[in-house]
Every structure is written in C-alpha cells, then in structure tokens.
Length: 412
Image (cartoon, rainbow, N blue to C red):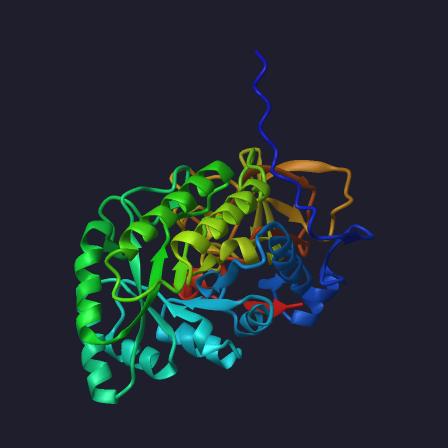
C-alpha cells in the first residue's frame, strides 16, 4: 500500500547560495560562523528586512501607516534598522520602550500595549509622550493620577477586545474572554471615564489574532475591526485620530503552508481608507506587524558535535537546542509538533541525503529540532540552519535552562 506523499516546506528561496553554502548578507555561512567566533547564533539579513518593508509599501495603500511590533525581535541593532524603515514602533514593556527610544523612534509614533502595565511603566510612558493603549479601568484611573502628579497629559487609545475572532489564526488575541484589551461592550463606559479625566483620547487598537496565512480571514477581521471602531467612535470624547487594525499576517513554517497573498489585503485596506475618509475623517489607519516583517529574514545556526545511530536511526547532536530556539522545538504553542524548514547550511548542493533527527545538548527528550527529516548527509562540524527564525527566537527562549552558554545575534 502506497503512503500519501508528505507535503514539502515552502522553498526558502529568500537566501542565496554560492558554492554549496548558504549566503547571509552576501557572506558564506562558514565564514559568517568564523566571524561570529562561536555557534550557535542567530543571523538576520538586513537586505531581506528592507525588501519585506518595500514589498508591503507596494502592496498597501500609501496612507496606511506601518508599525513594527518589536516583541517579535527586540535586538537593538535590528530595531534601529527597522525604525528607519517603518512609520512607528509598538512596544510591550518599559524595557522595549527604552530600546525603541534609543533606536531613534519618534515618541509620537510609539505605542505601548500590554495587559499588566505597572504604575512605574505608565509613568515612564507619560513622560516619554508615547501613545498608551489602555486595557483596563485600572490603567485609566492610575494614568489620571500620574497626570495630576506630573502635570503631563497622557495620550490614550483604547485597546478593544472585539466580539469576534480572527478565523484560522495561529494565535487568538481577541474575541471571547481575553486578558487583552477591554471588552467591546464595556468600551463606552471606559470612554466616558477618559472624557472626565481630561486626558487626550486618540483612538482605538484592535488586534484579533496572529500568524494567519488566509488572506480572506485577515480581510474579514480588518473590515469588522473598522466597523466596530466606527460604532465605538460614537461614544468617544473626541475625534478618532488613530486606528490600529492590528496585524495577523503569517509566514509559512510547516509542510504544506504557502506564503500569504497580500493583494486582496491591499485592496481591502484601500476600501477602508476610502470609508475612513467619510466615517472617521481625522483617523490614520495603522497596521501593526512583527513576525511578518522580520521572521523570514532570520536563521538560527547550530553546529553538529556528534552523530549517533540508535537502533537504526541517525541523530545529529548539536550544540544548540530548545533553550535557544524554543519555537523550533515545538514547545512555544504547537499542539502537534511539526518541523521548521531546516538545511545543512554548508552542504546546500549535496546530492546524498539521509533521514535523521536533529537534537540539542539538553537532558530532555523535548530537545528536538527536527524529527525524522530528510537532509543532506552531514558530518560532525557541519552547520545546521533553521529558517524562519527572525521572530520569537532568541528572546522567546529559556537560554538559562541547564546552564549552557548563551548564543549570539548578528545583523548582517
């Protein structure tokens, strides 16, 4: 009986190759590893970052602002690069706020979201003059006190928990009971509180979900978000000047997934811009993206330190593992573990292949980077590359686990 063919990963064609080696920023992988001085490391290609922003600018209406959600990758050098390309930065902590300000981002174009903003963080945000996406009645009350104490006026937008979800999203961020934002039905009451406080209301932030590869689902969520904002604007203490429609744009990680089609999304946003001119005439529309901007521009590189054959199956044992790339191990939200796209980065032209599992150095069976995957036949010293690693890699991994050395990050 023939088994059905296993779907292939989407080709990782964003990186060029030369003489059998992957090129990152035009540099052969083995030379980049020598330059780094160690493995493992993350490498981000600045040309690919710039190209992704250019692609979005071409696909989206020119009046739609593009914000980088730096939670996806807060590496300071990368944030400096992105700050020069996008219209604004979205932060999720005072620590990220410092990085954004150090990177030269305009405080007027920095927004701050998060469900547990501490009073000290709110005070810093008010002093910096950034836009605060308030997510509870407690935040509004504390901000009013901070403004009274400091003499500064806080800039506020309301993060709304909508009454719908982003269909087919890899991660739901809105709809139902959520810790994020204020339930849509409670927003009019919160707007009244803001009006009484004398603080500066600027608009709404709606983020229904993340990691979506279905353009029709994103289009529907954007349209519903806009219509909800128009409805809530009737209760606002002043005109809506800022409308963040969230993001949700996904990238392909797993076999069978295809890249997102931006064309319908661009057409829909053009329609919403036209409607905003009539229904929210003072509002600027914003799209907030993290993973989509940086995820495909990054790789994780780890070196093979051992080859082991156990009962007929080959394991490539590497110096990096789940402690440095939790997402690739499947322990950062996957329900059923799937392989990221992986290659032997210094053997890209190799003809001989073998089915292997790639594992890390940790004393746990969870430390699995590739499970029974066909790769070029590799030897001790070769370099394993995990693609789609520019987002939620280095900063989203428990690097202190079991005391192994931390890895490096390079912007090339």
